[in-house]
Image 1 (cartoon, rainbow, N blue to C red):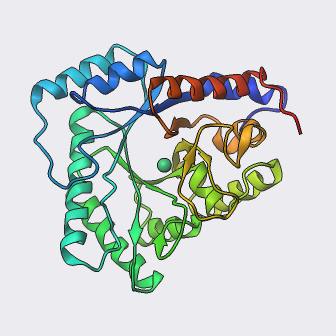
Image 2: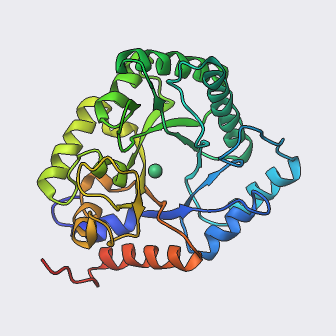
Image 3: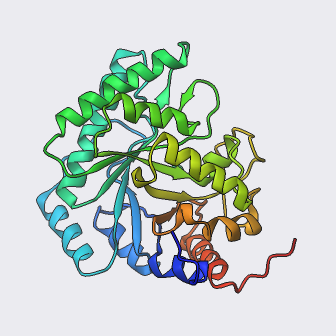
Length: 302
Ligand SMILES: [Zn+2]
């Protein structure tokens, strides 16, 4: 919480950690080079190809290169995002089992690489009730946390845009899953601004953000909110469209970001962009927009 005599921008900037999702093309340690080149102070990676189940063993050489490179720079925390294929609510047994294996593997990779957080989408209970799907997720989380109980890595459940039978659109879903798991310290939340907005959470006014902050405090506890995915949204409020947009060019807009970046809900947390990327220039531009908004360089026209 910013104190009353400190302008919110200064307080926010001082504690701010800003980064992007960086590619691991070539080799995992190259992701650190890319983050350094972009001036990131936090970063997110896929720890393997996110579109296939098959995973190659991590070589000790790559692990030590990754650790060495990161040790030399101030990039913290680092985050692994689990593969797109994961569905912890699936009633297809093979898919359910592969999803659990993938999460356990990514947590072990995070341990090996010295990465603090693993972020995952939860899944969809296609063809089944939300409650039955939630029960599947609870059993999956129980198995994942038990299989990795010697790990110091926290598993963060990400809110999603919330169409169909997808679990995790509402903050309450994530809260219930954490409570059902017995409130383990290693279970937390990652809030994606595009997904929240698409799911119907207004983010463009202080009053709405106060409301969301209260909901997170009540349902999850603010201390469990560990990472922010900072994305603008191609769709309108409540569109349920999971389409990320460049910062300021979507329906959250520059004005919306100017408001939310200065809200205490986001204060002191790592901000990671997952905005569209044709080249590194897109990341440079989006990072610059965030810094300009924080410094007040961008004048917001009503
Ligand atoms: Zn995200």
